Image 1 (cartoon, helix red, strand yellow):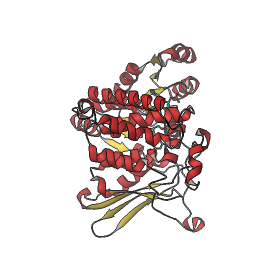
Image 2 (cartoon, rainbow, N blue to C red; image 1 turned 90 degrees about the vertical axis):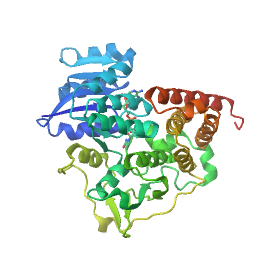
Image 3 (cartoon, helix red, strand yellow; image 1 turned 90 degrees about the horizontal axis):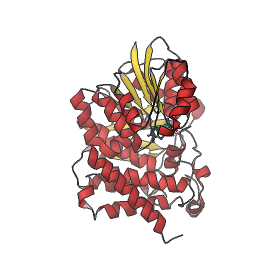
Image 4 (cartoon, protein in one colour; image 1 turned 180 degrees about the vertical axis):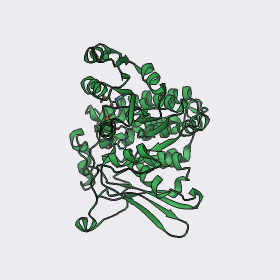
Amino acid sequence: MRRISILGATGSVGQSTIDLIAREPDRFDIVALTGGRNIARLAEDAKRLGAAVAVTAHDECLDDLREALTGSGVEAAAGPRALCEAAARPADWVMSAIVGAAGLEPGLAALDQGATLALANKETLVAAGPLVMNRAARAGATILPVDSEHSAAFQCLAGEDPAQVERLILTASGGAFRDWPLERLAHATPEQAATHPNWAMGQRITIDSASMFNKALEVIEAREFFGLPPDRIEVLLHPESLIHALVGHADGALMAHLGPADMRHAIGYALNWPERAELPVARLDLAEIGALTFRRPDAERYPALDLARQVMARGGLSGAIFNAAKERALDAFIACRLPFMAMADTVAAVLDRAEADAATIDAEMTLENILHADAMARHWADGYILHRTDR
Ligand code: NDP
């Protein structure tokens, strides 16, 4: 039996992972499931899958979780420390699918115990790439990409020498506002931004797709995961979302990975790696699809992409600062306190502000310093949002 834990089990990626695992109950032994506020979902899945422990991130939700688990034999726990303890329980494979920087410490706990980490939480590598890679190497743990673009690139690179890679192309759908006139973006609402043309995902990543902050995070994630120089990582707009990544080799060959817009492909690949298993995803009918289209992303519409380049050139702890500022700007946009395009202004202002605090941005990459940089960036972002003059 393969011992499995799922961090962020109640979310979009977590539920797709459970969908796959529940199809083969005799193959997996569920150690821990974690969630946030969706206690009913967490408790139901923990009971159905026979998890050893269910953990909510929020202390105030513990009584509800205990009550929902009464008589089931599933242990209940709550709080950030309990999340890390659950992630540290011996397991062979751990899905990291918490949203945001909150996923970093539980992911590290899973790596430290030597588990294979299936990484959907891109924020982990954006905020702490070198630290995460070192911790994995020290524990002999494997990290497998679950972001569909990174999974696609990983599959294109199988058996290849990364040093021979000329370019890695990550595709992007362009999100909800791809075809909107630019002047309309100033009035875009959270509900409009949370509608993705192709993928069904959590609210935050869907809005990040509309702003391209999601792709900005993915470019940095790819740099950390594959160790490629930033100038070899490109972004290409591909509205059909059927090619997820392309890898260009030194001999001119361009290898593309195609698949349906269904996260169960990338999750299933990581679950069965290094083998392939039959997965319950649609098969592409290329004759039916007919044409695949591509174009370059527009820098004015998607300023997040330039900010990601700035972060990669800057180094230090700018990735943690970038991500935290983006999270606060996104919170403010969702709460209707910040216009859509002002999210990028906020992040740019925070990156500028960080330059005046070398002790934060140029601190050694330790967990403590990353958490400090993250907290400072949130503080700077809140200040910027409060005092903006363009309202
Ligand atoms: P969701 O918002 O759907 O789910 C997030 C999960 O994290 C839920 O289980 C949620 O609990 C939990 N959670 C929320 N806040 C906290 C917190 N502070 N501490 C601990 N747990 C918390 O997100 P997605 O599944 O869409 O995305 C998860 C991660 O995977 C993100 O990093 C995203 O970028 C990445 N990803 C997602 C893809 C997708 O298709 N959705 C594709 C590729 C990558 P609850 O809901 O119970 O409150």
